[in-house]
Length: 361
Ligand SMILES: NC(=O)c1ccc[n+]([C@@H]2O[C@H](COP(=O)([O-])OP(=O)(O)OC[C@H]3O[C@@H](n4cnc5c(N)ncnc54)[C@H](O)[C@@H]3O)[C@@H](O)[C@H]2O)c1
Image (cartoon, rainbow, N blue to C red):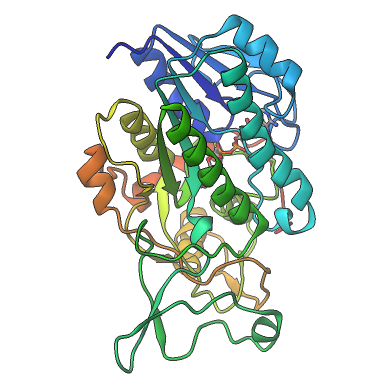
C-alpha cells in the first residue's frame, strides 16, 4: 500500500528527531506537529536534529484551532503520535497537565481527523512501560505469580525497597497486569484505551508500542524531569559522585533511541493483524547502580553514592520481554548498552554548553 504523507506529532522531541530521517526516506512528505514545549525546547527553535526534509508546524495537540490549521495543510496517510507530557514524578504534582496533553490532546486529534474526514490508514502510538507499574512477580516459595501492587508510603519510608520473597518477571503485553503507579503511566494507559476504541470503531489500524527507558544522543539535557541517563552523565562529567536512589538495585531496561526509531518505523509498515500492544526494550535488565558505575568510570568521576532517597511512583523493576516485537515487527535491538552509552557520552561531550546539576523531579 502506498502511504505518501506522514504526520509526526511531538516530532521535534528526542524520539521524533531520531525517527525523522527514516520517515523522510520512506514518505513523500513528512510533517512534524510540535508546540516546542519550553521544558524541552528552551530556545523554542527548530531542533537541528530534525531531518531537514521534514516540515515543522508549531502547533498544540490540545488546541482545536491548531488542528484545523494542520489538517487544512496535511492529509496524513500515517500518523506517529509522540506528543506528550513525559515526567513520571512531575505527573504526580501536575496531573491535570499530563491528563490534558496525553489524553485530551490525543482525543482532540481523533476528533479533528473525523471532522476533516481525514482518517489515516494507520496510527502508531508511543506508549510506555509505565502502564504496567510494578508488573508481575513470582513467589520463590511455590512459583506462584502475584501482582504485588504499588509500593506504598510506609514501605518506602521504612526503606523496604523490594517485595519480600518475590522476584520480578519481565513485562509482556497480554500477560502482565496493567497497574500504573504514576499519573503519567495512567495517562499513557488511557491513551491506549482511547485510541484502541476509536480505531476499531472507525476502521483505522492502530499500533501501540510500549517502550522501556529510551536513551541516546539527542536526549534533552535541559529537562530536569526526564532522562536519568543524560542526568547521570552530566553529574559525572562535572566530576561529582552520582547519587543513586534506594539501594541502587532498581532495575530498568535501557533501549537506544536508534533501536526505538527502527521499531516505530517497522510498526508503520508491518502488514500485521496483530492488534495487541508490543513491548520495545533491550530485553536486558540493568540496575541503576550498574548504570551509574559505568558512567562514573567513563568520566573518571568518584564512585556513585547510594543515598537511600526515593521517589513516589518509581517502580522497583522494569524490563521487557521482546518476543512479540521479534515476531510481529521483525525487529530486535542492535545497540548494546555500553556502545549506546558511549555514543550518548560522546554526544554530550560535543554539547557541553547545556548542563544541569541536580536530581530534580
Ligand atoms: N523517552 C522515553 O524513555 C520514553 C519511554 C516510553 C515512552 N515514551 C513516549 O514517547 C513519546 C516521545 O517521547 P520523547 O522521549 O521523544 O519525549 P520529548 O519530550 O523529547 O518529546 C515530546 C515532544 O512533544 C512535544 N509536545 C509536548 N506537548 C505538546 C503539545 N501539547 N502539542 C504538541 N507537541 C507537544 C514537545 O515539544 C516535544 O518535542 C512520548 O509519548 C512518551 O510518552 C518515551
